[in-house]
Structures are given as structure tokens and as C-alpha cells.
Amino acid sequence: MSRVVKLNPGVNRRSAGRGRALVAGGAGFLGSHLCERLLRDGYEVVVLDNFHTGKRYNLSGIQRDPSFTCIKHDIVDALPMDLEVNEIYNLACPASPPHYQADPIHTFKTSVLGSINLLELARRNNAKIFQASTSEVYGDPLVHPQPEAYFGNVNTHGPRSCYDEGKRSAETLFFDYSRTYGIEVRVARIFNTYGPRMQPDDGRVVSNFIVQALRGEDITVYGSGQQTRSFCFVDDLIEGFIRLVNVPAAPQHPVNLGNPVEFTIMELAEMVIDYTNSRSRIVHRPLPIDDPRQRKPDISVARQHLGWEPKVALAEGLAHTTAYFDALLGSRQFVAARSRGRAAKEAVMS
Image (cartoon, rainbow, N blue to C red):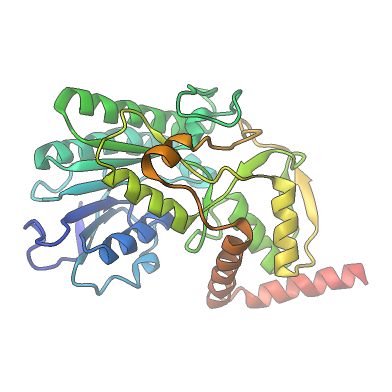
């Protein structure tokens, strides 16, 4: 059942400005940043979100904007028939392992049934549609760095498969709808992204490390820590989204968006400890099943066709992200617990 959180007058009329953009998953980490960018660019923005992982406070800065509307709705269910939009952005799927593994069947339905519902909406409206795919389609890659032409090395029945295979299926649907119905589609394969509005409990490595460091807890490194990741700041990624959607000639394949500068997990842990001036220790735990050993995008296509590459260095992005989490944890009254943790650590080390 859909519930309108705020409905602007004329929501079912096409906007006279840049157009009306629908953002599925707009209350999430990436979705909320995208909504802000679209509003700045002159769009009227309609959000669909079931708020399973998205948070209303992510939209607090734009909820009173007269060009913004938010509808509580799960895209697995039939969409409101009276929606009229010019562009559709599908970011509606849990993206961190604890969240997408919590209900793996619904995760897969979101990628498949949700994509079909949005593609049908695009078909009815003759709207351009964007799919937020993922570097997880490459699995534990045997090719490094990963170009778009690489088909991947993915476990089809493991605990991560609901997400990995769901996203691969969604890519299939998007390009089949494009070939069959002439819909204009854009598909981005997103590599590790971080920044303000990540959730402190989302299980992603950057948020895990920063939150543990700020609380004075042990920093958990899975495996040896020599596995690699490439970290893209959220503002850079959103710029990539916008350029991909607006490029005149639609790419007939997915496009990698991510930062090609590679770090080991141990390097990241040490940077976070140093930046936060934390007394946290690094502890090692067994590597999760199907956790990739290396991940680095080949962004040659994005550079050539979009004129895009990341601008924000990891040190700068960590500063913004740490400030966000420091404020968030304080506002959630975690300061006392953090102080207790540091006091205990000092007692042990003294």
C-alpha cells in the first residue's frame, strides 16, 4: 500500500522545468544525495521508498522543498498508475550484506520484480531510466582491474547471490526492454562508495571502521586485510550518474563508476585510526564466504564517453565522512558508550 508522505499540487502533471524525476530508493544513502542534486539542477523529484533501509532523516534537508514529493511504497508491488515522469532512477535495493541477507528473497524480488515495474512505468511514460547496478556482478574477479566486458566469477547459490544475481538479472531486464521496446536505458556498475548518510550499522568497511574507531572499539578486519578495494566519494559518484543519464548516445552496455585508486583493507584501517586519533586495536576475523579478494574498476569507458573520473581523494572524503559519523553518533547518545570504551582501553594499556 502506497502512502504519500507529502504530495505537491500537480504531482501528476509533467513539470515545466527540467522535468520530473522519479527516484526509487530515494531515502537511502545514494538516493538522498541524488535527490538533492536533481533538485539543484531544476527537476521536480518524486521519491518512492519502503523505508526498510532508507531513512526519513536523510531527506530532512529537502522535505519542505515545493518541488519534492515522497511516497512510501515498495517497488515490488504495483506502482501508482497515475505517476507521470520524464526520468527514472532505480536505486531501490539494500546494498550492504547484513541488509540484503536479512531477507534474501525480497532482495531478489526487488531487483527483478521491482525492475520490471519501473521499466513498465518507463515504457508508459516514454521515460529515460537509470539502473544502479553493482561491481558485485564481477564476483571474486579473476581479471584485474575489472572492465565492463568481463563477465565475472560469481557464486550463483551462496549467501551473497540474492544481491549479486539479482543485479545481474536486472541488467538483463534493462537491456532486453531497451532492445524490445526501444526504451532509453542507462546502467551503472557502482564500485565501493562512501560518504555522509551511510548507516553506522550497514556492515560496509568504511562505516564499520569509522564507527569502531570513534567508539574506541576494536577495528574488525576480515581475513589478512590484504584484500583490496577502491573507494569513491559519494559526490563524485552522483556526478557520474548525472553524466551517464545525460550523455547523448546511450551506451549499449553497463558503465563502471568508481575510483580506480586501490587500497588494501589494512591500509584503510590504519588511515582511519590515524585520522580519528583512536586508540582502537586492529583485530582479525575469518573472511566471509565469497568476499572478493580484489576490486578495482577500469573506468576507461567513463573517462572517454562521459568525461568523468573521481576528484575527491580518500583522505578528504574520510574527513567529511568521519565528521558526519561523529555528529550522528553524538546525536544518538553514543558518546557515553564511546567514552566508556576508550576509558576501558586506556585502563588495559596503562
